Image (tube, rainbow, N blue to C red; front, side, top):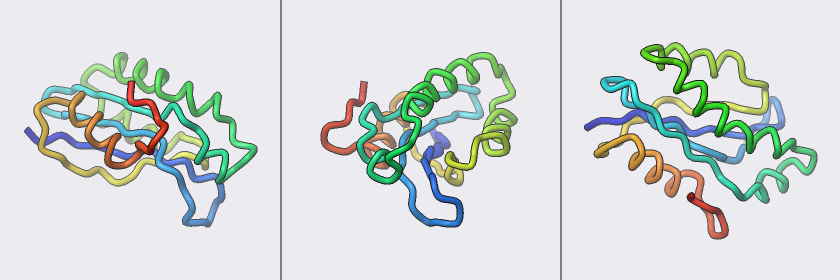
Length: 123
């Protein structure tokens, strides 16, 4: 089945093309199912911005999971809300599509491709 996914990017400098991929969101609109996977290793974020609030970024994963659980059938609206309301240092990539059995597999696979580096945790 086709699963949409978004890459979550940390972009600390307005007007710069510099960013670090910190997580992924997989979304199956047909089933209204989501999965979220974020890095546990913030070294690349801190290399880009030594003053980054990594505690806030780390809490974002749980916050997203709660928001999706509460969203019900409004997943598309919630994704649009994220794009409009996140602070300037966070961005969602354009929606991309991957063939996958389920959203959890898609999130894990896209995390490995887009975010994971040696030393990261994928739990």
